[in-house]
Length: 213
Image 1 (cartoon, rainbow, N blue to C red):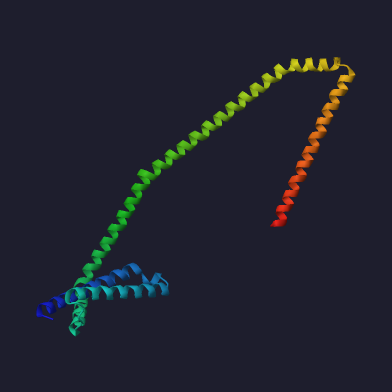
Image 2 (image 1 turned 90 degrees about the vertical axis):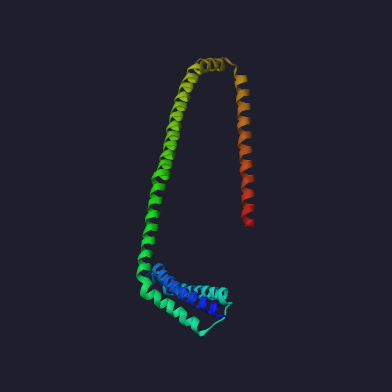
């Protein structure tokens, strides 16, 4: 390993140590250990340390092809100590400012979507539904009124025919009346038998279905 490579390795590891300190503070800020369950904290800690180890090794591999030296650990420790003593306060303030900015941006975006998109669409949909319901009620009342008028007209028109048929029925001979009554009774009996037969078939089908279940 040349001196240039060693120097670059030292500088890079110092930077990675500082980056590790910033990552650790960011991780703790978002994790909020006191509010989480122990097993969730444990899993997150394991994943965090694995990710940090892989990232440091990847950078080391890019700089000196992954050769480990004792001074690399010292450089990481120096970078971490430099971050803790010089950069931590400023970074935490900057982090809180970024978080506040993101929260404010999110709230503003949500309010804009709610006021400019959700509320107008909601008002439009409610207006359409109200218009459809009002129109449907109006059409129903109109149809009901028309049906009542038509029914009344039919009753008025049918009344003379009803009187004529009743008079004709009285004038008919008794033999014809009896024949008509017989035909009517036969038709009624046939209808009752057909209905009974149909009900029996349906009951048998239901019984077969139940037995298969």
